[in-house]
Length: 168
Picture: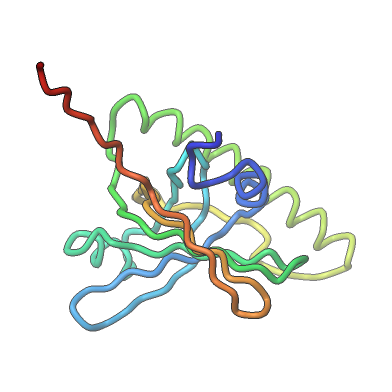
């Protein structure tokens, strides 16, 4: 996976996250909200979103996004810059619905078990998506690694340049 912006190590970190933070903007009003991470595939993130928030409305006008996570063990932050596209059907969509349901169930079970073991009482152990929701694919164009001393490392998508052969 040397050609991918998302390294294997970063992919493993992402796959342990249930939620990531996505920043969108419409006109001059920024919006940041947690979104359920469904899948990481090559240099794309697949996220689930409720339809009643600002994120969906913003993405209809401006597909540019920033997605952020933090590795709490190393205090290294990661920002993924790219474009988000809503998926509504097709060969990519149906497997994502199944994966969303599986991740949702696993997440709920883990929260219930952890809550009971800590003797916590909560009405919010279960997570359920409403009947209508959106799935977005975020195609990553740049990864910014933010170290604990504010050192920044940027990894960009390198465009493939076709060389022209001039006949002799």
